Image 1 (spheres, rainbow, N blue to C red):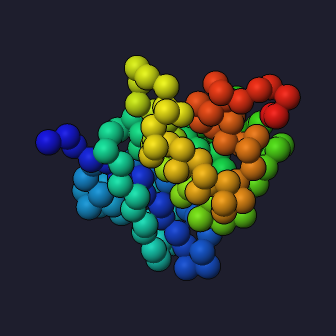
Image 2: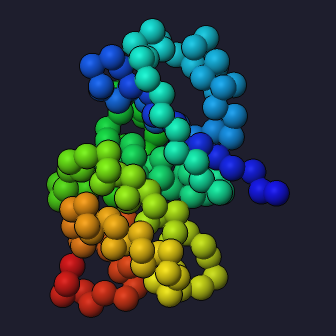
Length: 152
């Protein structure tokens, strides 16, 4: 059995996203934050999204940090996708972010074309249905392999 990883989000009482991270042991990680993180007293809610591989979870974490801009994360913020996303699109809902995470999870299986997978096609269709622009889907996933450049 493969080990699963959780993408976790810590929220303040007012709904502000404080921190995003990845772990395979959420309780232990929360305990560590409780002991060492200056923002911990602000936490009122924690959400978890589970992934079948560490790579999928880390990809989703990077995307969440770039799009959701948690107050206390410093990782991923200087990457090239961050400024591009900030300039071209701001997620309007957690529903859109969750849909993008599913596209990433479905597209990260190396060794064959992900767009041939029904799971991947369904994830892209779902993301488009909740309002994620095609340009963002192409940039953040491997969909760009099959789209003509003019449609971007």
